[in-house]
Length: 171
Image 1: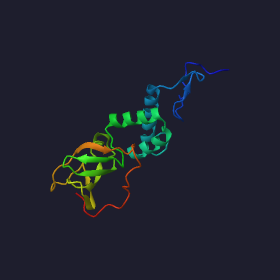
Image 2: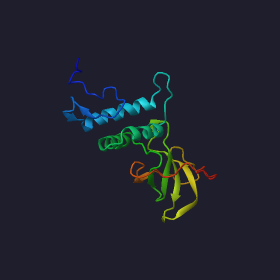
Image 3: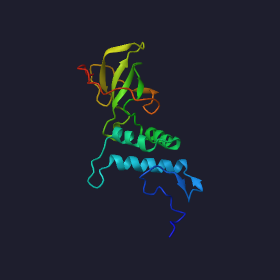
Image 4: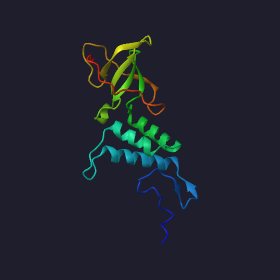
């Protein structure tokens, strides 16, 4: 027997939405939004004994699954709605410095305050050596910093190399 025409083919969400209704229509942005959001929740939740993943790990996995135009748009909308700055994103801080996001906090209420590695000073010169700042837990000896704007998203270009060992100077 034929499957119902009213049931989208992506109900299992094992792959991105594609052709629906026996190929008569392509999937919509709304179906991609639902698929991406559900896949993200499944990735960060420990389901059926599988280990949960961090927001960064979940986003990296979803980038591979939703690589088409609508999928990437849905990913950007989800990231923006959650206030996440994925690892590799270059951001300008309120101090005028430019930093690469190193890690997204585990606590969703702190997603907008990730750990960053300052790579350019206020004048745009490279910082030697780069140093890390946890925007969620700032050190009292230095001025508070916040993210002013995104310079380059991790989804726009190849991610910035942030896996180098942390410098000994932590702020």
